[in-house]
Image (cartoon, rainbow, N blue to C red):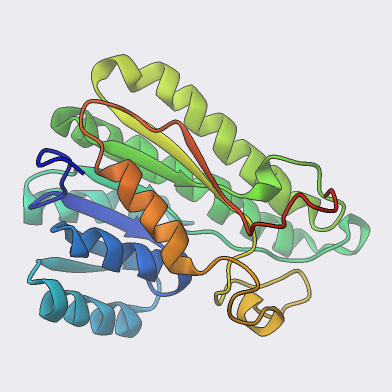
Length: 248
């Protein structure tokens, strides 16, 4: 990075900040000097992580208990951030989840939970943040997925929600890019984290260390995109090296 490509004293919001990619992203951004707003439903976990960021990196934090499925929660997250820090430089739309498997066996509640989290929550946060990110000339970052790039026979609803995230992000870029807003889509494949697989177990249960990407690798891609000055990284894919060896 050059001297200008830094997050020193910038303000970054990370949704889904309590674990996995979100937690790693908070550390990556704070290590580069950003003040971090940690948003998720688990207040206790957020408070522990916030204290660690302050101790390790000397940054300021804000713990923001947030259910991204609730419009009022997201609006409060943005308003509280602006009140505390005076603006927003980076929004990382990371909160997401997977439910169910085969379409004919999927409960309506499972479908709605995925849509409200992976789609509605991204819309609410982006809509509320755009005026502030425009003012700062900052970045909107969307954590999508390998599943949002290629057809998926298992859990097609999750995949469709990530196709939506990518399409939404690129259309937002078309709308606000000439207003100085950077927009980046980050597409992880399998990440060894607490994210649930379609059978209800976690990816950490499925994969041993070294088999797939770690949350820190995705977080570093997010930090890189967020730290650009005057440019915008359109899309970053984070895959294990043998991902394409045997097709999809």
